[in-house]
Image (tube, rainbow, N blue to C red):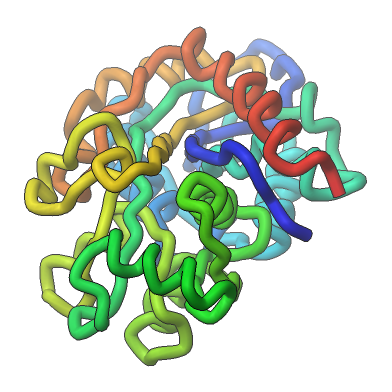
Amino acid sequence: MRLTRRASMMIPFLAMPAVRPARGQGYPSRAVRIVVAYPPGGATDIVARKVAEAIAPTLGQPVIVENRPGGSGTIGTGEVARAQPDGHTLLAMDSSYCMLPYVFARLPWDHAQDLLPVTVCNFAPVVLAVKANARWPDLAALMAEARANPARITYGTGGVGSSLHFAGEDFQHDAGIELYHIPFKGAGEATLGLLSGTVDLVMGSTPSAMANLRAGTIRALAVCGRQRVAALPEVPTFAEAGADLRRGRGAGFPDGQLDRAGRAEGHAGGEHQPAATGGERGAGDRADAAVLPRAGGDHGRHATGGV
């Protein structure tokens, strides 16, 4: 499958079965579980854990994060879609969710109805990173070699159909180059693949890449967005090199405890400090979050043409 055209935004979000829970005792009445649809170490996992820590005091109950990776996010998403719609099981996902109907012919849940978004947690820019000793001094050099040697340079992502896979294909389309995609089981494994020399570069996100960037084991050639990332002021944007990408991260719940959970994340404010990991604070607004799956779906329809 060759993904083309625009794939520029990723939006992680919390989500739940979209059935209104019966009224009764106050919410939450027990621990809240956030299911992360990806392995540990990726941006969605990092953001989910920071948000869980920030909202637990407001909710008055423990907030537990569990990883259920696999199937480009479909395993964890399916588990939440089957959960009781009582507000105690949430999904942490990214904008890959918007693309799933255009990547898979059938999904084991109703993509349009079964989950409702609650809030955008943060926007995490895409970053193109190479090993610290890579032969390319900048993005222009990498693109020049890629044009001269199509499909010889390899790039890794957290999986087929992920938002970073779309970002990688979008970059190739905009730059007029062809890279060879090697998918991994999550962003953490993709970074390990880069460090071991399995791939030449990775399309990652600033939260998942920041620790290695600061340690000097990998080097960023470009980040997405209209301006440079405050945490990486020396790294140019894709736009400065003739391409442009933008990626974000959000949250969704089931219809019933949406407002309480959304307010909790909103009240947490900047406590989960997305800027510290190279991200930007999200809208924190249910109305804004509700637009994202529809917008992403339109984007996915153009980007893939289905499978």
